[in-house]
Length: 292
Image 1 (cartoon, rainbow, N blue to C red):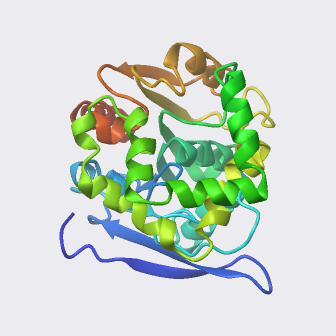
Image 2: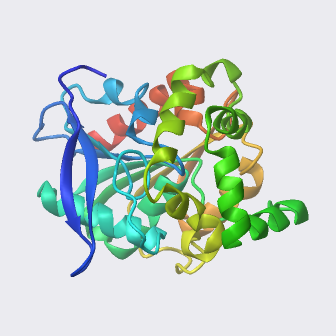
């Protein structure tokens, strides 16, 4: 990222007694013929996880990225985290920047949040570009994984496990299975993911998906979704957590208009794992959107 692209913040009032400082960055210049893009990171990540992507798309276009509440360098208040909350954050950000329509590019939990928002506010979304979205899991969670998530959902055990994994070694072990190209799981990446875990409130926000998994699922949305606009699925072929052959059909039930591209030699973190291939495909998609 260029040095001139500094962190910015806005104060989001969630209620009468709750507010959170949200970190974001903006890039590029506004262009009359090109709608802005908002990048939304996945679980445990932060806006820097798009470092290999944003520079490719900020020429002649306004681009934004923000840390979802509870993650990155945004505040981590003791609130009920959910896709609905993240969708409300997207709404607040669009109001802040006076953005009428936007292209949402999301990864994993960020992609699920984008879908949730588009379903609620379809008139605000020009297109969804979804990288390995979460929120629909089919039968991919086996018995042992179910037991594990049940354990970390227990307040006491969850806190112990969080402490055990909230360090560089634990983060490295957690990131490795989400990458095909293990060289990408380097010290810089591990440091980026480790730092927010030390923040006040991090245990609460990071454990929320295991404590209330239903709040992070898209099963409750109508099929097909009320969002009828452009939608694109980009999937890493080597995603073992959310294998494309099982998960893509579920998302196409929700978004039947969505085209799907499987990118080889990429795991769950497709945009960073196989950034060049991801950027080429995304550029093609954006070109088709701009040309109408």
